[in-house]
Amino acid sequence: MSPFKPLVFSGVQPTGNLHLGNYLGAIRKFVALQESHDCIYCVVDLHSLTATLVHDDLADQTRQITAAFLAAGINPKAHIVFNQSRVPLHAELAWIFNCVARIGWMNRMTQFKDKAGKDRENASLGLLAYPSLMAADILLYRATHVPVGDDQKQHLELTRDIAAKFNNDFSKRIRDLGLGVEMEMGEETVDGFFPLTEPLIEGPATRVMSLRDGTKKMSKSDPSDLSRINLTDDADAISKKIRKAKTDPEPLPGEVEGLALRPEAENLVGIYAALAETSRESVLSEFAGAQFSTFKPALADLAVEKLGPVASEMRRIMADRRYVDTVLKDGGERAGAIAETTMKSVRRIIGLIGD
Ligand code: TYM
Image: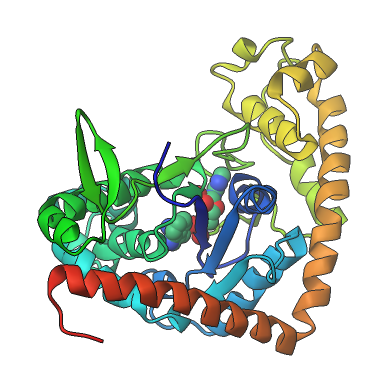
């Protein structure tokens, strides 16, 4: 049992269209967790600067992600929804974590390696430091649980490494100042300030793959729009993309093991299971032996039924820009108050003079 108060935090970047992977891997889980936890959901606009510094429409994309959160069912009154840059303490804590984390840790991040490509020397320093800002997002609220898709797992391990190093390096000051929480670290019990956050990566859609290539992740940056279902796609676009999705010539197997080495079939079955809120086993027991000519229309109908209402609600919310901005402002104020309490303690622990 963690001695920290359970709190969920997660973030989504305002870059490009939200797609089915973001929805099933993250946003839909955000919605479910509201029942059991206090939750903070953040549109991470500062992170999106690491991809492109100059956006034509950063503000609108930020509103669009906010609208998606609300349309999916996140309650901004009972929980907190805000944009990251509105609470500048994220950047302050990230700076401190830049001094905690080691360059070697950052260099090992597969997302950095993928995004920087061959010309690493020319990647922005922000891209390298990205996971340190992500750790700051989470630990500024001393969040204990973070729902994400599988691609964020390594970043969350790094968040734990940063928390553990901070707790260890400052353990005496944390104890002397009485700011510690008793934590089990291996055999020992130490006084730590930051929790070792748990990733929540579960269910059949933690890694939704491209509809054009079952070995590649569905992504906002894929040049082919046919590779992903966008949350804003209408019924025709959803049906067309599923009809054109790559498959193999075999019928569906009766058991999950039969999906091994069939990445496209595995992906479509996983999507069906996640949309229907069931397991892959139960989807296969219904469709065992079916051809894709039968399965794809059933999947398209289900996707339209589940995503259609979210898309139309998103459009409705987006039309009321003032409302969206009020949600972000109110959420930012409440997030800022929690963040300030944490930062006051962090400054004292480190020895920075503040209030
Ligand atoms: P981002 O904006 O790329 O994606 C948002 C969420 O969607 C998940 N996701 C997927 N899940 C399943 N299948 C896919 N194909 C797929 N593609 C994306 C991501 O795992 C993520 O949960 N670094 C984060 C944003 C972030 C953050 C944080 C998350 C910044 N600070 C603090 C959690 C906590 C990112 O780039 O997500």
